[in-house]
Length: 335
Image (cartoon, rainbow, N blue to C red; front, side, top):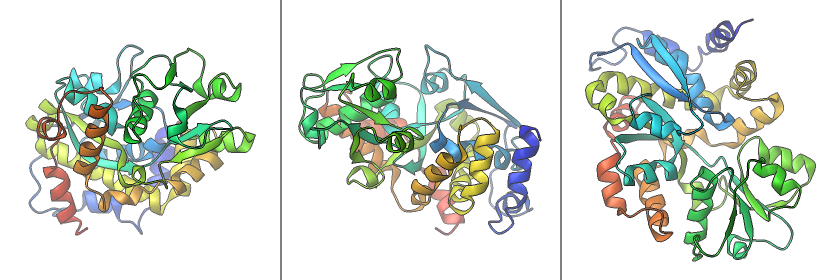
């Protein structure tokens, strides 16, 4: 069975959720703005936690945006950079990374939160908290400025450390998890399926779990953002994309087995069991409860304290967010 047919099969059994019928039924949203384009491009990024983006594809197509395309990220350009350049229209990215790019003047708009907590901070014996990272080494991938570097910097500034001086950031072409497994670094930030693998291998221990530990569990990890010009020119299309991603969130909650099979068949995850466990662990339904503006405010404060951005949270929010689509969708779905 090819990928397209597999996705169709996954979506076929969703009558109980009413996802595709709701989008295709005439008059489902009586005051819906006209669809100005049929084209939409997403950045393709790896990660089991991005399941709502992958599941949203057929919902977006069903809502009239039939020219759906993925654009692969390039080695020298992040997905946010591609969005800023107008080479993609939407990205699902870390709130911290989005705040940094907004501070730098990139023309992007954060539209909604997607999910909470996909990462866990692992460390070796003798390190039991973020404060204990002072003077320790943390693997962050090939370069500073990576998502792990920015996120752990935010954690460090929150507890009073100076991320620029107090932590030894280790960059390498070697996979950070393997550096950690070989005891060549003291800590690293793990994203699915890495936490499941480390626990299975009994390597290290968790000193911060963003799924459970406050305040991190109260803020979105990944958020949906658009190229600002696309959102301004095509508000009807933008709203449909936001709605599809949020409905895909609900699908991850109600049908995790189906979503896990899709992730495997489409090559987004290597192992069914770890994919299913990740889907069950991440509280995708929290998009209905949490305020995404609080997330941008919180992380902007942390990044400013850590010397990584210059703008105030108020300026970041004013220049780089647009919640009107989310607010309309919440009213329509009576959440």
